[in-house]
Image (cartoon, rainbow, N blue to C red; front, side, top):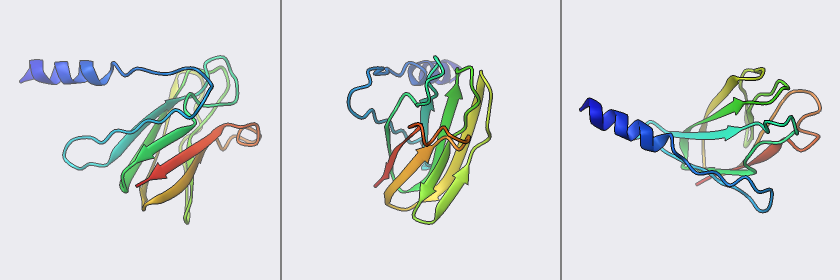
Length: 129
């Protein structure tokens, strides 16, 4: 049983990434047992005001976005749209910001709420189906 859990974690941690800036990168995942979607993204490690993904997708219900911050600047992740306005904790380099919301099908925006960051382009589209 323990070996199976370790193997599952090892596979889950080996996600491939597409670091080119062309097109829209999307990511979605749903934990077993209907616990909702857990989406991951990272702030740009070089300090550019952007995330590594421009688009995320999830099924309707509980959605959590987890943002790792390898950047030298502080960032967070927030969600807005369709009456939702939720903010994760602003974290410095090495920190992790999380935001969760119960989302209905529709289009939402995920963004950094640190003043000036969203305006500089640190945002993306979250599509909920």
